[in-house]
Length: 340
Image 1 (spheres, rainbow, N blue to C red):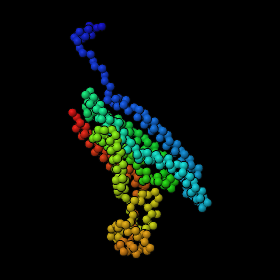
Image 2 (image 1 turned 180 degrees about the horizontal axis):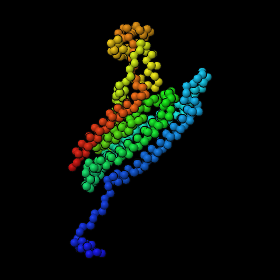
Image 3 (image 1 turned 180 degrees about the vertical axis):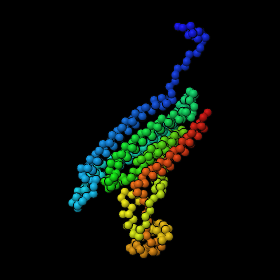
Image 4 (image 1 turned 90 degrees about the vertical axis):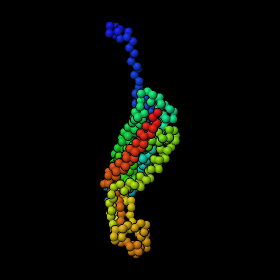
């Protein structure tokens, strides 16, 4: 032992305290089972989507569904192949889309219950706050790691699903698989599910901090997520200016819009351009007489073509992200109020 070491020991200098494990490591240890389970589920879903894309493209090529039928005899076989395609793969596509649509609800419930509310309910957060961990740092780590993992998982799953969906999206997709037009699977495509997961996690954090009970926080988060789904779908078509067409005949508006368009509003229109609601003149025995009685001279149709898909996705993602920021701000305010 050197003279310097002996002198320091004799002087009675205090030994270094043992290194404490970081908060991030503690969060990982508490939720590692859930993390590994989620990773395994994500890998299985991605593998299933890769298989689904290969199976669908092989079926389309084998039955010649990439091109319209040429003769009447070919059309009968074509229709039978389309029906078989829906029976084979429609459930897979619809099931994956439904899972992505419910992913924000699962994310919110996980954050609200096991991540936030359980800590407050058991009182273990007080132990962390007495170990040189500030409330804001505790909240940032508790929320940051799970939310980052959820966003990465949602991004990967959404990208793989979009890649699979587009393998037959250039065809008349709604004709191949009923109910999976781009506007019907909107919340499973593009950035929409990622923004929705961010909102669900922020809402779950706010609910967990406000209620401080695991099961009530999870229940309230699920209820609010479901409750806000319908207003969001009602507002969605108005986030981007639509394409509007007017025609003298009600039936002429649909062919004009084209295939795979989102036709969300139609009705009668006057000479001055004023829209009339619920005239139902197209159902009348003499539609022109019905239009004349209401002062109308034609019909209008508002629709979004497939080219509006990305603009609508980005617009909705912006709205949902703003709501997530508001929930996160409320959660931060609540953390400050919890400070002793």
